[in-house]
Length: 187
Image 1: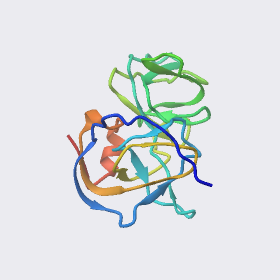
Image 2 (image 1 turned 120 degrees about the horizontal axis):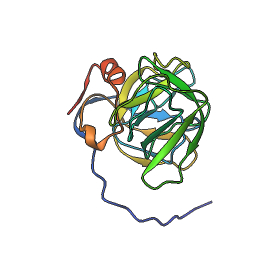
Image 3 (image 1 turned 30 degrees about the horizontal axis):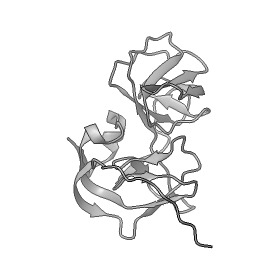
Image 4 (image 1 turned 90 degrees about the horizontal axis):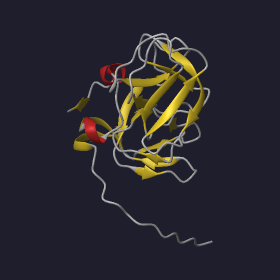
């Protein structure tokens, strides 16, 4: 059955300014565990698993300072976090109880318990493997080449192993993520 959809294209500011080495044939990114509707260029992904799918290294940028006793974190729009995910900054973390996306300027992540650490404006948080927030759940491998609107199915994409990424146009990459990407340079 032929399906025609009508949409308006917007000018897209590219996140990757120099592409050197990609994965021939591209990759397929799993969207089942994503909480957003857009996969931005410059998003960090992990290596393909046994199922052949790559998973996104979920990150978010903090927009208001967080105290050690706070149970909420205000982050920039566009993160892929979902309730049940663990978030961390490399030394502290917590489990997400709820995400309020009703504000037009930011999302509010509510944790099940206090973050137990401080976060300054502009800091990045990542999806952690456990409540302590010290280790990444997905090991960084490459970056997505272009931005895509997700339509429900897994997303085919180019993936770059060696590239230069303009940080201001890409999702935030905390230092733990940058350190794991040997061939990707952020400017």
